[in-house]
Amino acid sequence: VVTSLPSGIDCGETCESEFDGGSTVLLTASPDKGSKFTGWEGCNEGGVSGTACKVTLKEARTVTAQFDLVAPNKPLFVESAGTGSGTVFSKPSGIECGKTCEAEFEEGTTVLLTANPEKGSKFVGWQGGGCSGTGFCEVTITAATEVVATFDLIPRMKLSVVREGGGSGIVTSSPPGIECGETCEAEFAEGQTIVLTATPDKGSKFTGWKGCNKGGVSGTSCKVTLNEAKTVTAHFDLVAPSVTLAVDKIGTGSGSVFSKPTGIGCGAICEAEFEEGTTVLLSAVPDKGSKFTGWSGGGCSGMELCEVTMTAAKTVTATFELVPRLKLSVTNADTGSGTVLSEPPGIKCGEVCEAEFE
Image 1 (cartoon, one colour):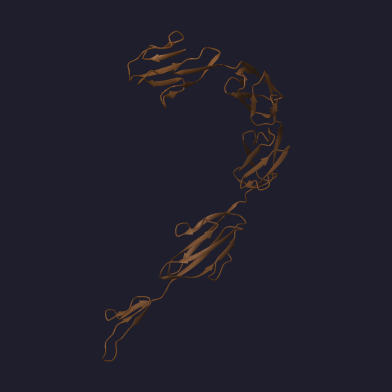
Image 2: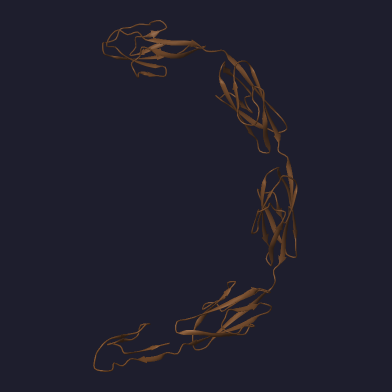
C-alpha cells in the first residue's frame, strides 16, 4: 500500500489524486506480508528516506513504488555438544542458544554466529554450515542448515603449597583458593596463572620461594602457571632477637650521626634496635663551625665510617669539636690608598680590616 500526506492517495484502492499546484506531498510505502519494499522512482531529488518519498507538484507527476516478494524463510538449527556448556548468539538476532536454538532467516541471508563458553568451559569449535575453527561462524542460508557448537570442560590442575623453615606465616592465592594456614592446596583451571602471597607471622620473616614461574618472583609474591599439577614451597625463618645500638655525642662541637640500615638519626634519635647479626654503618656529619674528630666504642676508631656488627647491645661515641677561629688583620702601609678583599668574605679593607676565620 502507498498512502499520502496530505491525504488523497491510498493505493491499494486510490492510486491517483489531485493536489494544489506547488504543494509537497509525502508518500509512504508499506509492504504486505511476504513482500518487501525495494525502492522509488519519480521522487524529488534528495526526497527519498527509506519508505518515504517527497513530491513537489509543479506539474502532473507519476511516482513508482517497487515491491518484491520476500525470499522464503529457511531454518537454522544450532546444537551444543561436548562436556562443557556455553551460549550461541546470532546476528541478525534470532538464535540465542541457551534459550532459542533455532530460528528462520530469509533465504540468502548471511548469519554470523558467536559462541560464548560459560565459566569452567572452553569453546573448541564449529561443525556444519561450512564452519570450522573457534572464531565466528558465518552461514549463508540457502537451505535448512544445522550447526554444532562444541564446548568442553576446562581440566583443573592441583596447586599445593608447602611451608618450610623454622618460622611461620600464611600463603594466600589470587584468585582465591589457597589460604595456607588452613587450606594448602586447591584446584584451578588448566593454563591459569595464580599469584601467591606470603605473609610472615610476628617473630618470623619470609625468606624465599621454590617452584614459581621463571621471573615470577617479586618480593613476597610468586606467579605460577598451571600447565600441570604443581607444588610451591614458601620458606619462613625465625627473626633473630633485636639488640640496641646507642650513639653518644661528646666534645665542644656539634653534629649528626646517621645509620644504614635506617634507625639512628642523631640529632633526633640516638638509639635504635637492629636484628642480631646485622651490620650497621654509621656516618658522622659535623655542623657548621664544628669538625668530627673520631669514633670510639663498638669496635670503631678513626674518622672514617663506623661499621658495627650487632652481636649484643653496643654504644658508640662520636666526638665533635669546635673549629678554632683565628683573627686576620690587614694594615695599610705607605702613602697610597687601596682596597683589600678576602675570599672567603670577611675582610673588606677600607671598611673592615680584620676578621676571624677557622
